Image (cartoon, rainbow, N blue to C red; front, side):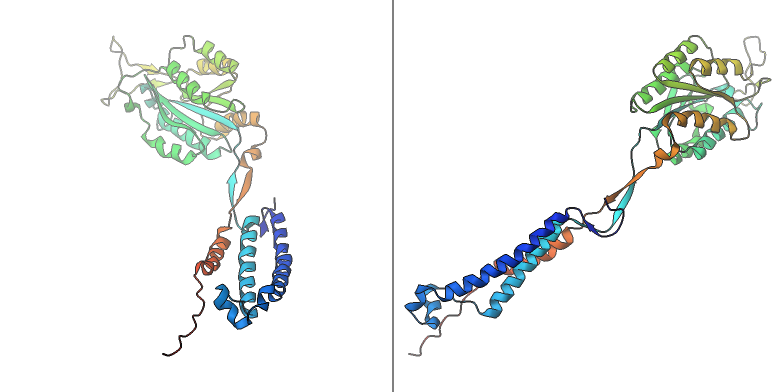
Length: 343
């Protein structure tokens, strides 16, 4: 396909324009034949229109009709050939990589051992990941006691970024981190992606949840071709968990509830899921390492940016004048009636 400029989609149709020459020659010959017809022996030429209801066209009229027919034929043939001169560039679909982010919005993410707090830092990490994303399709799930699909898997990073400020711990009434349910929702989202695409899950959390059988589930995901990466938020020293009323959470003995980053738990999950574990910091090295692991399975990043040209068909620009020229053929041509002799 030509890359640019005017061209025809089916140029071989232009050979039909050559039919104009033999048809013109045939019409010229038929005029000579009709002039020598035997019927002309029985009446004078000026009486023939009154006897037959038709008349011999003049040379100018015949030439005008031939020119109009040739113009209509030429316009239709050129339209069938498919003239093109402008195009629209679109991105080609590629299986690529799909990444589902699981964001922990439980009460422990309000701890201020990292400034301004863990949840704000997690939102910033997601924003950095989206800014540095070079081809992966991203989905977002926020979870605490239940999991909410914030965004399905999409290439529209801007729409996900626009929803980040609204993600807060007060979105759920019942507190606690049920990572198992969020993992199942992520598996459901990734099930709709092409099988030949690279599928990944990124857990962003402080690891303050009951591990249970999560390692086995992460291993099952890896066996199904879904790799689990983890990004730890917080410090190992931790801090007290804020209460909704502005104070601090306490246990049954009225002791302050402390939460710290469970780095070992997060690392074990990533190892079981054949992914990477990184601790969040102020630099982009953490999210860049995870993005590199996501993209490397799909080959070069530039493969995600391939595009093609979709040419805009312009044949209808020729159909319209052809229809206008054909309007004259539908007019009823009336021959002149001989004037009546005065009585």
